[in-house]
Image 1 (cartoon, rainbow, N blue to C red):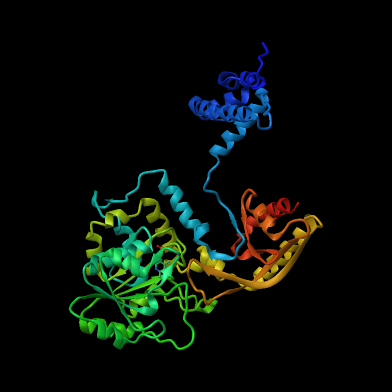
Image 2: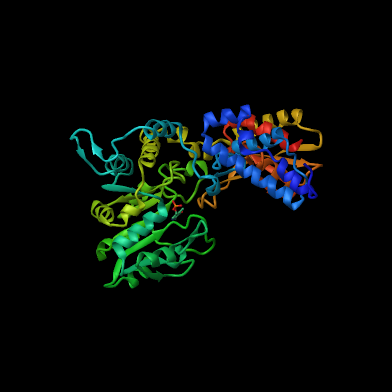
Length: 467
Ligand SMILES: *Cc1c(COP(=O)(O)O)cnc(C)c1O
């Protein structure tokens, strides 16, 4: 029956939920997921279609087959993960937006073993009794770092906060003005310090602070001396910063704990590989820090975590802080961290830990890979594209080593059809998404952060994006 209102006719022509449910592909989805889930997705599509008809927008196809296609697409999309693996072609090794450190094979194996089963997280197998969840990792950390005790929390920001809150709430913390830094956009030493309940006592100037400045600031209210690795920034020119050894002498004499936030969790000396100014945790402890803290997912190359290590008495006090419960980590983190640390114990960290392998990758290897990749790309890509190999730099990133750019070979891509911005956006929408750097009118691909097994999906994605 035709009515006066053509829109009403269209609305009536929309198939019912049950009609769509009976189509064979939908039956498959009901078996795979559940009837309730599929019905809900069908209802969402039908609601969209009704809206489109009412608004008089482009008359949607109301055939059951076309609508089934829309529902299938939606079902597929709603079940594909939102957190996805991407190809990092930026050359930034520790890219915070891209999840920082990719885990080692050992760590991934440990995760898959422990994640789907029960584990002895807080259970001492030898005694058949309850234990502390830090115990297993502590043995390993103590051995690697050469200290008395260690504990693990959610990240290094939490580590700094807990140290200050436990050891200095209501009292003064002496910090050099040159170290009152902001890291990663929201981690500001003065803010964390204030929230912890500690009182900031700034000493020295931005570029020069001497041991005597610390000494002059020490009084009855001083709870600790804090050193912060300035991570993402450097002052050049006339600068002065006391050696840790000088501060140790002062801290011992005045009986005040000396704490160093070293940031990156560097556990092997990377200076032979061009990484300067990254103190190792072992060196900091050996030079006299009573406590150090650092991230698990920066240069250490493990999962997100914060490690606090050093004097047993201090670590025990931190462990007993009731706030510890709000920062504790789960079995997956312990498992991945333990497997990552094992590579340091066996002396195979540079080979086995991805971030260390990427940072120490010889530039000759990158030149060879880039040239080979460029040749393959030129053969397959449309002629509207130019591919050039140019010398450039990768960076460690993650707020580490701003003074240590790493020599690399970049592929510079230019298209006569797309602007660099459009190209970048097309690369981002590939599967897997490809993330590149832009420079002027070129998209730059740095193979340092692309694993060799990703070269083939990278090439395919580039060709699709350029076509
Ligand atoms: C990165 C960094 C932090 C914060 O560490 P997260 O693990 O990201 O919380 C704190 N202090 C320093 C010196 C850092 O470099």
